[in-house]
Image 1 (cartoon, helix red, strand yellow):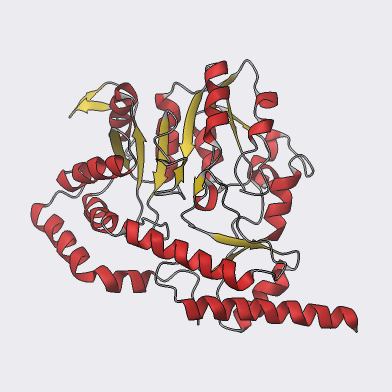
Image 2 (image 1 turned 90 degrees about the vertical axis):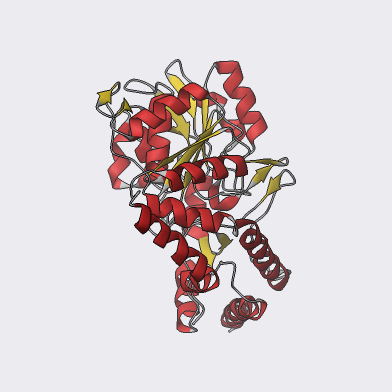
Amino acid sequence: MIPFVDLKAQYAGIKDEVNAAIQGVLETNQFTLGSEVAAFEEEFSAFCQAQYGIGVNTGTSALHLSLLAAGIGPGDEVITVPFTFVATVAAIHYTGAKPVFVDIDPRTFTIDVNAIESAITDRTKAIIPVHLYGHPADMDPILNIARQHGLIVIEDACQAHGSEYKGRRVGSLGDMGCFSFYPGKNLGAYGEGGMVVTNNAEYTRTIRMLRDWGAEQKYQHVLKGYNFRLEGIQGAVLRVKLRHLHNWTEARRQVASYYDEFLSGSGVPTPEAMPYARHVYHIYAIRTRQRSEWQQALQAKGIQTGIHYPIPVHLLPAYADLGYTRGDFPHAERAADEVLSLPMFAELRQAQCEEVCEAIAEMLSDQVASVEL
């Protein structure tokens, strides 16, 4: 069996460090926020080349509170993409604002910067570019458009820990950057977790209050807030993992290079990294019009795969009220029909990558044979 993700292998390599970190929290009893979370906030914001970090309970909450800190609310519109995990859009909905979609660039799966301006109205207040699969969106045009129209830019970097745009870390490029530490992410907690990074002191102050019941001091509730605090154990675990993230990222990039090499010349569309991008390969997604057949055939050979994401948000029943229909965003819809995520984790070996690609080559050969018949 070649798993899609192998968190057990990751844990085996850092077991002693993690266990000691958790034991430290058990001894201090700082289970909610506390010194480990505060230290992780400093370390991760520095990693992102940002001045401030605010730990929260999920990446979704990071997006939600960033929007609130920016003053987004009922009657406002926020531009983003339909080809993303639903949390991007849910966070906009939580504020009472309206998500407005534009299509993706089919090469990168990130927002089509040429489609943004036509979606701007007098109600538009923000843009949320999604650094999908670990590839950064093309940020310079986005930031230029935002400046021209007085818009806030909130980066959804939940899949892009350590990804770079023109040598700068994502999350520090816009007004705020949002990260998820869901266990399967490149930097994952042992539970849920998220963070907002920013260079804006006022946004930082507001989000710190909003995550903790709107209180600036205990029982001094300045805002109507939420219970979105990051747990101490997660902060401790993430501090350990952050020390390994660079090596894990380089390993993922090596895995991607193996796939690129073994699939070269096969005709299978593989991920394309733009010249401005340092891709961190949270997901390695190929494309095929025979996705169901390929997924079943790979599973039969003991190879696990994933689909990220099979239905674009504008076609989900939950968001039918936005009024979009099939055909509105053809690149997003085609990607949703075709993407197939291959196994991707730092401990994946070259021989395993070759085995996956040999299985794909066998399927391609079978397809050619069936056509000839």
